[in-house]
Structure formats: structure tokens, C-alpha cells
Image (cartoon, rainbow, N blue to C red; front, side, top):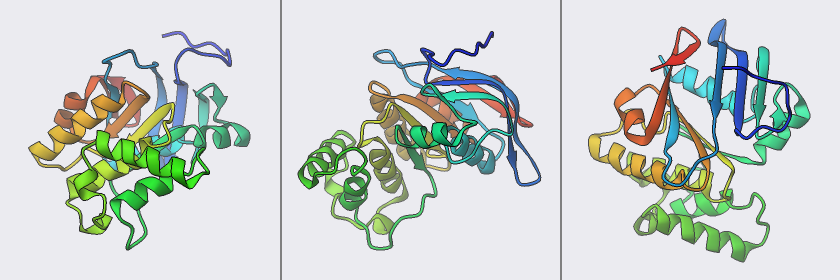
Length: 229
């Protein structure tokens, strides 16, 4: 697949031969891929990894938390080799992780309202946005439950809602479907598909069956190299 140097690209993510270090080794080596803008009904792009640390490294890279060790990477038109580019991307993406930390006593509604502060400084606006996404992902019955007291599948759906509440252009999901029971996987995969109508979504994880349930296309990250499934 050819890759040019144009700043403007129709795909939110364009990677050309990138490498990402993780500890003393490589989480990603010489990887090239694209994530296209979603069409109505299009599902997410999945990336199957060998281990959770690879998923985390890839999401860190695309979210602007880390920079590529080599190669070219553009996310939403921004050059991820620059500090300015990574900062711009962090304002335009949403990130949901399986093992994300949260305040000890925060409730499901509070988590989502807190995330809605991005681009929505007015409290009433945040409340309306949070209520809309909680309803969309069938989380209203859990809204006042402390996140730590909620079932794991519900807590993950709440993190997905928090990542999506400010209506980002790109959603990055780190291991969100890994290790769930079949019902939990099915419900969360349906939520991912629903949100893909509005945002580009890249879902990284170690569970092939779960990725195939949520995604139309799945790539495989094997020994740090991204290949077709």
C-alpha cells in the first residue's frame, strides 16, 4: 500500500513503517496501516495483539501519549513525531481502557460527566451529553452506582461512554473486550458497533473472537509486525 507525505488525508490514521518500543523490546515494528472514516453501518478496525502490553503501547501511540521511534504516523492529519501534533490529537480522540484507573468513589454518571468537560465547559451541557450517552449505551440503571461496585462488563461500558461522550473523531479502545463472558462481550461489541456510526474506531486486544464480533476487519500484530488476519 503506497503512503505519501501529504498532510491532509481522508483517513484518520495513516502509519507508514512505524516502530514502537515497549520496555527493552519492540511492541510494533515496521507497521503500515490505515483507519478510514466510518461509513453508515461500518464497524471498527480490530488489531489482534500477542499480549495486553502491545495493545496498550499501540493505543498510547495513536492517542498522542507516546511517539513513534521511527517511521511516519499521522493521526487526524497531525504529525505524531511533534509535540504540537500529539497535543492536538489528545484533544480530538477518546480513549477507553480495560484497566483504566478512576477515583475511588466516582459513580458511573460522574465518570461520564467528568469526561464531558472536554469541549463542553458548561455544567448543563455536560449533564445533557452524559445523559444522552448513558441512555444510548443502556447505562441509566447503573448511573448512580459507584464504578468500582459495578459488574466488570458494566464498568467497561461506562469507560466506553466516557471516551465517547465528547463526540471524538476517533475512538481508541485498549483491551476493552478481553476476558469478558459471552454475554458481556456481545453487549459491549454491540455498543462499539453503534458508536462506529459517529466515530472512527480502532480496537486493540488479545481476544480474536471478541474482535471479530465487533469489527469488520481485523489485523494481527505478530512479533511487533502488523499483518492481515
